[in-house]
Amino acid sequence: MPTPPGNYRTIRSFVRRTGKMTSGQASALESLWPVYGVEATSGTLNFATLFGRSAPVVLEIGFGNGDTLVTQAHEHPERDYLGIEVHLPGVGHCLMQAEKEGASNLRIITHDAIDVLAGQIADSTLDRVNLYFPDPWPKKRHRKRRIVQLEFLKQIAQKLRQDGDFFIATDWAGYAEHIDAVLALDACFTLVERRRHAGDAPLDRVTTRFERRGLGKGHAIWDWQLRRV
Ligand SMILES: C[S@@+](CC[C@H](N)C(=O)[O-])C[C@H]1O[C@@H](n2cnc3c(N)ncnc32)[C@H](O)[C@@H]1O
Image (cartoon, rainbow, N blue to C red; front, side, top):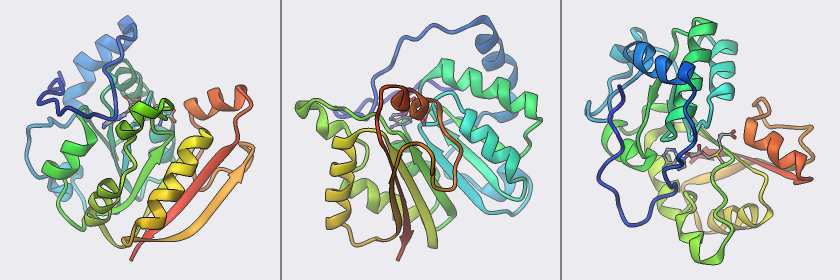
């Protein structure tokens, strides 16, 4: 079973949701964790050892139920995928999907991504990072919880290879403004592309679960592709 996220800092980009775990998710956590799970206590990861080969590595932060992660891993067998998520029912769902697809290029960590980046990912080892629909934290007093901050961009840039890409998407207009404002201060990335669309033009990704929810509420979608300079 995964190591529970510990060492809580005062400000986290998530709260532990108490979503109901289905029996299928619970048994997937029990039986499939040894296949796909990576302990958050395992120190700096050696991707060649972890995946049993040398291939480009894509990291997805906050994969939710993992449908997008598993789809991308299935569509790109030439890449290896590492997903980070703290919501255990989502992790259980992801494990079930991974087994269904017979994914061999996928591993999962269930811990705060900020700690994982700092303690488990060596510098300049990632080819791509995906951050799809991060929690929007709409209330003004909660904005400090938004994961996209200047320090976070620096941390991502440090872990990406030269010319590695960072993809972000949101359906929350206030978060899109916030991301643009943080990017204006950032010196680690150049903007490859920024799109505002109606869900019909996702930037090199499939539609995610949270995106569908936002679209159902009439939200617009913003996508960014950033390149490490
Ligand atoms: C709004 S949901 C989006 C899920 C998915 N990407 C999608 O688009 O359907 C954001 C997810 O990020 C996760 N999350 C937030 N902060 C995190 C962190 N610091 N480390 C790992 N996961 C995090 C939450 O648990 C949540 O499942």
